[in-house]
Length: 85
Image 1: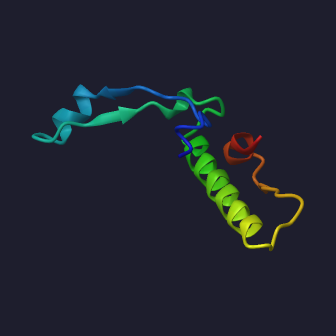
Image 2: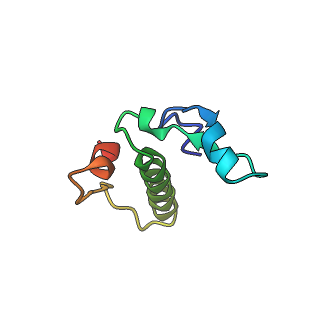
């Protein structure tokens, strides 16, 4: 669901010939998540977390346990924190 909401960028998957040779006969591919805005794979995980929290909030809203606000707070000052912003 996070993918359909465009909460993170699509990044390329490339074949690594050197790693594939080391792991022969298994091909090795690299997912270039360093091209995410935060420079990390954590955009995907944080996008998933945020959509899960949103679903939980919507479920609570429908059951009458609604709170007025929903917040996600990251204690990370690194890539995970950047992914939340």
